[in-house]
Each structure stands twice: as structure tokens, then as C-alpha cells.
Amino acid sequence: MINPARNSLTVRAHLLRYLIIFLVAYALVVGMAMWMETGMVYPAPRADIGNFDHERLGAEEIWLTSEDGTRIHAWYFPVNGNRHTIVFFHGNAENVATCGPLAQQLSVRLNANVLVFDYRGYGKSDGRPFEQGLVADGTAAVNWVCQYTGIRSKQVVYLGRSLGGGVAVQVSRQLEPAALILVSSFTSLTDVSHAVYPWLPVRWLMRNRFESLPFVQRSRVPLLLIHGTDDRIIPFRFSEHLYAASPADPKRLVPAREFGHNDLALENYADEILNFLNQLDAGE
Image 1 (tube, one colour):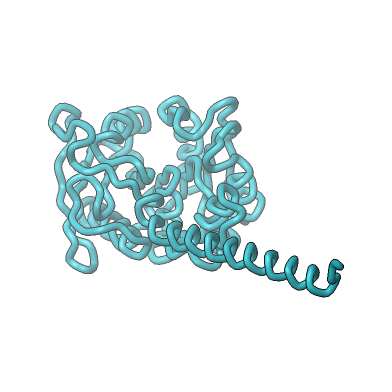
Image 2 (tube, helix red, strand yellow):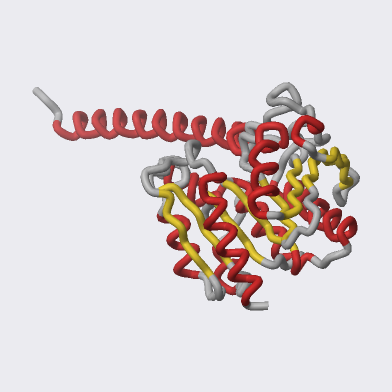
């Protein structure tokens, strides 16, 4: 004769066993994600990626020293009679060699001095990447430009692409720029990670957060946003959120129609950047 009570206990035991197996497996996945975070956020291309012959592009090779003594490698593109000076914060899978041609083009087309630098752990720069370290490196880059040119940070334009937008915003908390140009960037790195991995507790556990939205919400630094409408890595809506939250004047959002994250050629939007910089000049 079947005992209903015993069957019920057996079913509960099986369910409890499956629940324990699921929780252990989930904890292992979360632990693995935490262990892999640095490599996923910073797939830092070293000096064997790209052509590091700076002279072919007419750049000056610069070595900076970050706050903690870390040596940071940079290229500087000076222009005679320049109207603006730009610090270029590149993305997480780039380095000065891969960004050098773009920095040169922007320098010529915008008639601007451009400094592009490698975060710690990238290219020829020393050290290992982490959020506070990248912010310190960006601060060192801005300070170098100010000392070299004799201008203040409020006369320097910060241009950040992808992860570089998050770094540029954090540097702006300490050294206010003339303007922020954010390309394919985000409200926070945790928001991006949550969009990609909604089943992981990234909002609780991520160490590298790059919270841009709180600064943008209270900053009146002129803001230009350029973002691919078909971006599958950092969706276009993140720039829409930044634009809507910003009280800056002027501010502009430029949708890069039918472009994704990695195929958005920023040089094609040099005229948009130039118009924005001219608008800043007209407001002086």
C-alpha cells in the first residue's frame, strides 16, 4: 500500500536536493564571473597590438607619472594655432597605437591639440588596470596637458569612447573640463553588465562600476553624446538616459544611424564635434 506521507517526504527531499545543486552551481557561476571581472572589463591590448611607431603619424611620445607612481605612455599631436586641446580616453579594447590614426585625424580636422594615453596595463604603460587606477591615469593625462600648454582643465575637452567615457566622467569630478564628448558610452558599467547578464547580481558584486549618471545629473559641463542606434554592446538608450538627465547647456545627442558599437567610425562625425566646439566658442 502506497503511503502518501512518505511519498510527499520523498518528493520534498528530491526538490531540496535539486535546489541545493542549483544554488551551488549558481554560486560557482557567480564566483567565476567575479574572478573573471577584471579580464572581461579590461581586455588590455599590450604593446604587441598595433604599430607603436609614433613618428609615422607625427606624434610626440610622452611618458606621464600617475598619482601612485605608475608610468603611463601617451602620444601627443600638437597643432599650431589650435583652438582647442583634447584629451582622448580610449575604449577598453584599444591602445594608443590602435587609436593613433584617429587621434591624428581629429587633431587635423578639429585644429586641436590631442593627447591619447594608455591606461595602466595597456600598451606600454606599467601596472594593472582597476577603476581608481584608470581615473588616476586620466587625471595625470589632464594635468600633463595643462602644465605643457599652460591652460586650465576648464579649457580642455575630454573625449571618451566606450569605457573611456566612464573614465572621462570620473576625471571630470576632480578636474572640470571645457566640455565632455561621450561616444558609445553608458550610465554606469553596472547598468551595461546588468543588461548583458540580467541573471547575475552585478549591481551588488561588481568592483568596477564607473557611475556616470550621478555626475551628469548635476553637471552643467557642455555635453555632446554620439552613439550608434544599433549598438548591441552598449545600447543607444544609455546615451538617451544621459542626455535626458543632463542640465547642461549646450547639450546634444547625435544618433549614429544603423551603426553598432565597433563599426562606428568617429572620424565621420568630426563635423558634428567641430560644430559643437564652435558653439562653445560662440558662447565664450
